Length: 209
Ligand SMILES: N[C@@H](CCC(=O)N[C@@H](CS)C(=O)NCC(=O)O)C(=O)O
Image (cartoon, rainbow, N blue to C red; front, side, top):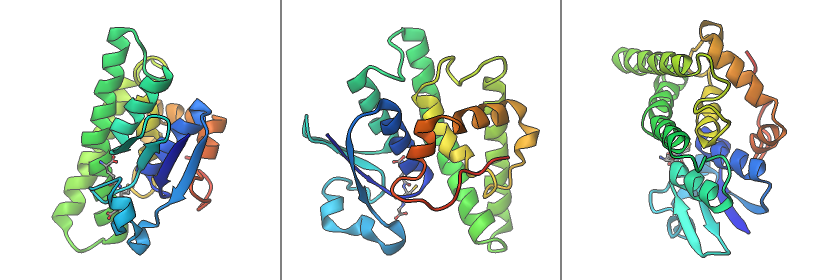
């Protein structure tokens, strides 16, 4: 059994969607980051960086923060969504890290400056929105002629998809990125995505372009 500590954000949804895809049993612990629950000592003991998501695997006693590491751990534990073929495996990990170091942090800053605090820093708005657009362009190119980022549906897709689901917050017109748009809509139809998106609670329907 896995304990999942999460909230209704892209990083949290990455793990709840993966757990739904895997069909493994898990307990959901809601950590309301708008009420500073991520600073509670019990949570910090599991996630010292005071960020969701985090997991505890009761079977192995492993506790883990950082969504990318959690996804790799779960994929390796179950042998799913991370190919054993070296070329496909490294391609998947390359794009998982691209999301962790690029798409997530940059889009996250775009949410802060463009969606929630417009007018506070023109430089930051332009810097992060331009970088987010550049990253969508990179993803668009990677998806050319492919159904999924690393060929087969993998943890790279599951990591990137919840960030793209915030395209409206980022001021992104998905019509300008046809490969990303098709990929996004296809993944949105998966039952595990439709369930995992609404963990730990329903906020709104999955945004559709
Ligand atoms: N690199 C971390 C980032 C996690 C992260 O930034 N989580 C946000 C929600 S998406 C959070 O917990 N924020 C709480 C805070 O800012 O105090 C990961 O991928 O797990």
